[in-house]
Length: 204
Image (cartoon, rainbow, N blue to C red; front, top):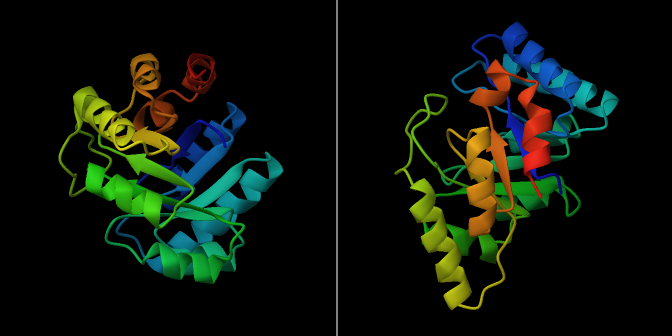
């Protein structure tokens, strides 16, 4: 599973599309299509375009929140927030071969996601980020460390955890030392798509 995930950003459809195109041009191999507070028809159109682009670039395309859209466009999977449809329902709709990721903020959330089970966990936020409304409590590096230590103490195998929430290139080394598998990045890749190659080099 790719260690670097780009979470799409942009206020309008052309902007979203352009940002996804730029990320793919710069070597991203995993796009999560995320566009909040927008008409579902427009979001569907963006997802359709994104899936076609990702297929051209042989990249993974997953859809944020919308299980039915993911199914209709035959996306590679879906990412579910804690208040979204249950993983069990999503798995029933999408089938066993699609990727299902789940958000987590606490050790209890992580244990829930392991038990469900989801294919990867988006754990965060690391720090404040303006790309997400209704931000969960900020974890910081200490929060990630505590969750990983807690899993080790319980002798639970560490799942594929992606750090999320204001991640920048300089964070990767420390996150990997803590035991975090990968990172989902939005702002830094949107503003500087060429940074993708540097992220990839930093990820062991």
